[in-house]
Every structure is written in structure tokens, then in C-alpha cells.
Length: 112
Length: 113
Image 1 (cartoon, chains in turn blue, purple):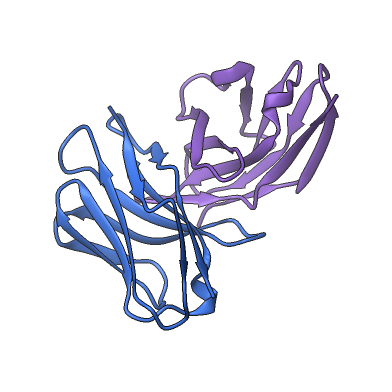
Image 2 (spheres, rainbow over the protein chains, first blue to last red):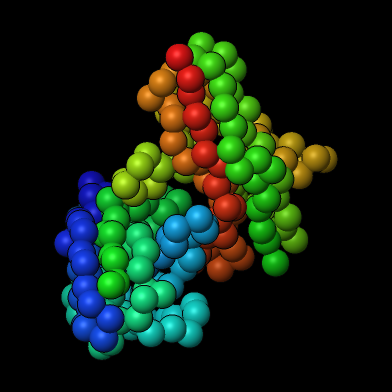
């Protein structure tokens, strides 16, 4: 199974509040995991990727952080949200057979 | 560096007519190329992928794409559009590390009755 669970599915948060989006995956151990953001009218932007527990690489400087406390858990966080953090956040995993990436259903974040 | 350019931001077709979504790529090595589909408020679903095997790749839901190295293209086609094909389509190239994908801006496909 390549199932990816993301929650919450939708979230409305005030500016300055904290954020925690969670992603868990099923299937093989030690998958490569990713967080992407899709802002309105724009393509997908890779935010973070992780090749193992505690190993996080950031692709762009930003107000967000990521953590991987367990092999199949990937968390996206912020201490203080900005309006510009609004968007559709997608968790993804690398497939078993190669560089194909599979996506979760996404989490809609609206910062007001 | 590698990138993809989706030549049309919007495509509109009538139900039952062919679909053509265009994608050109730029890569300094043999690329892996993908097409993903995204229905409204949903995650991305893999339609098909090219990884240096057969140049004509068949995917799900009747879609296929042909890798043309001479034209640096990877256009997505379907012989007959269905209403359920209305969605956003992304052409994607894998980067050299294999850790991340570079996405095109997307093409919104509208299917009219």
C-alpha cells in the first residue's frame, strides 16, 4: 500500500497562530517524504523533504518547519502563521519502485 | 537544471473529441517525466510516467503520452474526452537527485457537453 493520510483536511487559522499539519504513510519502512504547497494560481512548490527520522531538508526559506518524529510520520508546523501561508498543502511519498511520487489528499489552510 | 513548460494554461474540448495537453521539457540528462491529474480540492494522482523504456506510455483512464527526444516534448493525449476528465493536469520532470520533482504550471482541462 502507498496510502497517505493527511489531516486536518481543512483549517482556518488567524494570523499569528500556530500550525500543525500531520501526515502518516502506510507501506514500506523508511520512505522519502515530502511537503509541497500549492498556492492559488501557482504550481506546486517543494517545501521540505525527508529521507529518514530526524532528517529534514528545506528547499525554500520560509515561516514553516517540518519534523519527522517517526519513520512514517511527517509534520509541517509554524509558530506564527502569516497571511501568505494560505494554500493547499500536500504530503507525498516516494514510491517503492523508483522516483515516482504519490500524493495525499491535501490540507487546505486559510489564514485570516 | 531541468524544467517543464506546459504550453497551454487552459484547454477546452467537447465531450467525445480528442484531448491534447502539451508539455515541453528541458533537461541536461535523460529525464523521467510524469503526468499527474488533480481534481478540484483533491490531491494529485499519477496518470503515467516515462522512465527511458518505451517512448509511448499508456496510463490510466485512456490517457497516453509520447516521449519525443528530438522535440523535447511529452504531450498527453486521449482519443475521446469524458466529462470526468475535467481537471488540472501537471507535467513533471524528476530532478537529478531523484528526491524531488519539478512541476509545470498546470493545464486546466474543461470538457463541455
